[in-house]
Structures are given as C-alpha cells and as structure tokens.
Image (tube, rainbow, N blue to C red; front, side, top):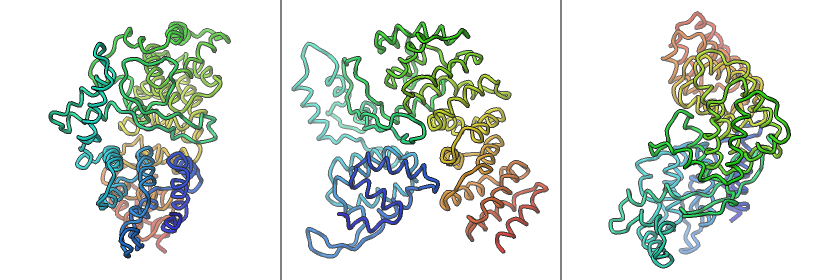
Length: 505
C-alpha cells in the first residue's frame, strides 16, 4: 500500500501518509499544521493526485489496468478519506471534490458505507443535484425498524421508537428518510489544532440517536456543522423551527448547578462592580457546558444585550479562566456577546467594544475569525464601521496564518468599499500567498473590477498587488490584471498600467 504514496508529491504525500497511517485524526493534525505554516497549503493538488490515472496490476484479474489512483486504495482508506473531507469540506475546492466523487463512482463494487459517505460529502459542498439521495438505504431502514420492534418498551414512548417512526418504510421516499440526516450526529473533531492558542487539542467524538433521557454528566463535543449553523445565525435571527423556546423550556436542559449560576452571572454582567474570586468560580460553569447547553446559557444571560461599558470587565474575567475556553465554547460566546453589536454599528465602535473585541481576538484568534469575522463577510455587512474594526484586528491581533484565513474568506462573493479596506489591510500586512490563491484572487479582481471603475480604494488595492506581489504575476495573471486595469477610470490608471508594464519587462 505504501507504494501508492509515490503518486503524491511534496506536502500532498505527507498528508496521504498521515491519512494512511493515522486515519482521520492524524490527517487533521497534519492538515492544520500545514495550513498554519508560512507556506500556504491547498488540498487541490492532493485531490488531483488521487484523481490522476495510474496503471497497475489488478489483484483479481492479474491484468494491467488503468484507473484513478484513489481506486487502488483499501476500503478503510477511502472511508477515512471521505470522513476527513467531510470535516474540512469548507476548505476543499468544490470542483476537486466533484472530480474525486466521479472517480470513486467508477467502481462497480462499492460498499454501502462508502456510498453514504459520498452522499454526505455531496451535501457538504452544496451539490443539490447529486446530494439529494438519503443516507439511509431501504434495507437499513427496515433493519432499524426491526430493532425498534425488538427493544422498544410497550409502555413507554420515545427513544428508538420516536426516531424510527419518523422513517416509516411503507413508502421509503427521500423526504421521509432525509429527516434521519437531521437527527444523526456525525463524528466530530475540533479543527482548531493551533498550539499557540493554548486551547484543548482534542475533543471526544459522538454518534447518537434521539434519546428520551440522558445523564447530565455526559459531556461530549457537538457536531462541528451544528456549531457552524449556530455561529452564522446572528442573535437577531429566529430558530429554524420558527418558534422561540420559552425560558422554562431552555432551563430544562441545564444541570442544576448551571441553573443556579444564571442569576448571579446575569447580575454581574449588567453591573460594573468589581468581581471577586467567588464570582470567578461561578463563571467557570462556561467550561462545564456542552455546545447546546452553552447556547441556552448565553440566551438566558442575554449576552447579546449586555451593556457595552461592561464588556471589557466581563472579557477580562473570561481571559482569566483556567483552563482556557475550548474552540467551540469561545466561538459560541464570541458570537453571542459580540456579533450582534458589531453588525449593528453605524458609526465607529466605542472604546469599550473595541477593547472587548481585540482582547478576545488576541487570546482566541481562530474562534474570532470563524464566529465574528466570517459571518460579517459572508452576510455582506462590512460597512465603514465594521471595516474599521476588522482592519484593527488584522493589524494588531491576528498572526500571519490567521490573516491568511481571513483573506481566503474575502475572495468569494460580492465586494463593497468596506471589504476592500479589509483586503487592502491584509495585503499590506505580512502575508504569503500561494500561486493558486493568488490566481483565485486575481480572478476575483477581474470579476469585481466592473463594479469599482471609479473607486480609489479598489485602485489603491490593485497598485499594492502589482508592487508587492509582482513575483506572483505570470502570463495568465498579466492578462487578467490588464483586463482589470482597462475598467479603471481613476487618476491612478496610468500608474497601474506603468506598474504592470514593469512586471512584463
């Protein structure tokens, strides 16, 4: 099996070796270290190597066959590969994933588990046409129904019966079995492996079904996608069910000692009095919550409505907690405490809000990127006030690899003047772009240039690209940048043309 690694090159071979020997966990560790390295890493070359045709001897027919490299690997490797791509799908180019799925679909004998993982990956990347099939086969539903009949308590309702009654097999349509996907929880591992953040480096994994009761002492990591859904829903948005739960319903899922801490934390949060050590002990319940409990606790505490003048005080105690908050816990708190306040800015942020944001960003940079910066960018809410705050974070709080993470967030979707300021600040800072990322960025420049013909911000950003990253400009990029400059109508157009001409010569 190790001979198959010769089909990979450089860092792609390192990742393939980690996946082959260490499984999903080992591949995640290597992937996060590669992403945090000074030389940016992309999964595109790794996936292209898997899709490349190889001529090898078929073990069954003993004949020389030519097919994609991924088809020669074991079933266990393919399962680990698909699980790994599911966990990091937000960083994977969609076209490369589709090419890999196409290659794996060529295999005649394909195990049901691999088919299910492929369907899940199709849903992850938003491929509606290919990802509409349910993850549960009709045979699987029938077998689960049999288990329900065997183990259910005729006097009790719920548990297995409640779960499987939602997947009746009389007409095993996609719509019925699709609801199983929403009930399932996938294998989870925290993607934040950065050692400089001092955060917990592992999380337990969880696979469960809806249960009628459970022990309060059970602390497990929730599915990363469920956390992401919570992060991108701002404090002003309603739940997917359309109904807001009542406070009593929210309290019912919290253990008693966490319920008892709610009034005290709420009182302290809304006051500016000094906190003593007893208050710190109370605040430690934040580290004792799973993600669902923490989301409920944040809603009960009203973090979204906390007065801005109390934020620095509250954040200073968050930073004093020992051990540090986990990645998911920090993300949920940052989203609830800061996202709504930053999104609602119509003028420059006050000193208290700036202090709170910068202090949390300095200690928890990746959760801040994912829970605060990314939602603002994705929702197109980077007005001048938001842009000014994000630029401060880029310049004063984020390390180069975190700036690169934010830069990757900006090269999709539509741009506005505020986002141009953020991109310019990133380009002006210490950042190393790979050729692939620079090519994607120039393509985005080309698509956006007709919308900023008279924008000085866009022209200045273009000038920074031509002067600071001239070594990245190849023949294809020259043509793309020349097209961008042709749309420019500012007085900097001649300077842009001169800068491009110096590169070509």
